[in-house]
Image (cartoon, rainbow, N blue to C red; front, side, top):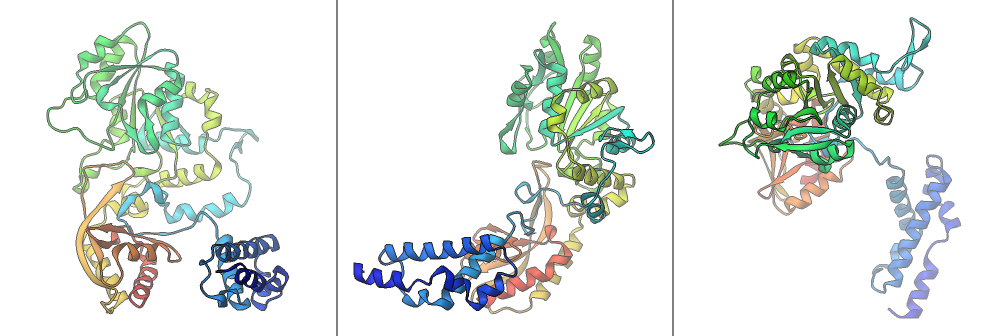
Length: 471
């Protein structure tokens, strides 16, 4: 394209004032603020100029016509005006999906958000005394009630709980931990690194696959401040292995005057083995072994908001509460609200397993999953197989969130087998839907796992799949 041709094209680009006066953009100005409107216009015009400068980037001059440019501005405006944090539909079958917000909150939790978020509350106000109180009282009593712990407090995640506990109990002193428990979880959170940040000195004992009680005893010295046990919640070592039970560590700790802390990672209040799933130690079981301090996540298997829960002996928890780090790590009123309401459901296990989404999805019976998959297929109806084939098949879900790595959850799947549209194209189009639908690709097939699809979302998913069939 010659310089003269480019000049002519540049002249055809609509002026900003003309665009602002077009009927469609005038209508949009009632919905969007003027600065955002101008930003969208300049973005579209700059893009057109770059295409013209590229020489072959603008193949069709009609793209410079007023009507088309106005449409581009409106599309850009809609994208710019959309919130960054958006709801989406999880069809991956990963129940605690870290990238998708981990645990969903229960409906009764959401119902309480309005009055607390939109008004004042007794966050740090003692209504009985009429003076300043502690924010931790809103969850401490119910945590003690459910777990029989002497004391409790909450920080903003489990990594923070481990950090502040180590900083309080072992700063400048030694913490004994098995080599087989030096775990790393998502986001490169590593036990050795957080221990270093806390100022504690790590003393490794045993081997990757075998650690004995005598290894801990041999490591005891005048600088030993703590025995740390880390639950391998996101992986398992199998075969020729041996580990030390928490009760035995507690006995050794009592002998030498050394407290025992266990980081449970995910943490749960429900014994999954009662429902035919793999055994995961509950918080109550660990505390029953007289462990001095236990830390775990408030989201993940508990099904609440992101938070780190610290339970244990009263004098240790009170010491942690006085640590200056707690102010930097404390949780806000909305997290407290969500956690308290979630914990209240655990007063009755049947209520918890029915109403807390994380638990109800993990424990969903196979027959219910099959019925849901068939219902979704009926809602979609018969589709032209030109773009893809559609079948209902069996598969496996995952708990996710680094929890229960060996647990296999049989599930039912809606399977989209590529035709004219490839698996990646199908996945991208579902992801571009409003709201986005996040699926998974396996063996060149797009799979929609009904375990993580909510009943209220089935109609939206059905409409999106039908639209794909007609694309």
